[in-house]
Length: 57
Image (cartoon, rainbow, N blue to C red; front, top):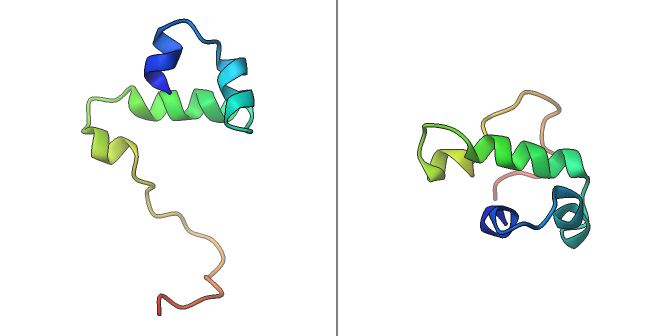
């Protein structure tokens, strides 16, 4: 997706392709624009919130 954007496809069009909002696309690019590894950029960090309804099993 980032390569497609670098080749001139607008964020709005990428959002339509991925059935999401433009702000989500912007957030994804912001995560990629770090000094960390690509693996860190594409991995979600732990977030607090409601407990899961399903167990890991």
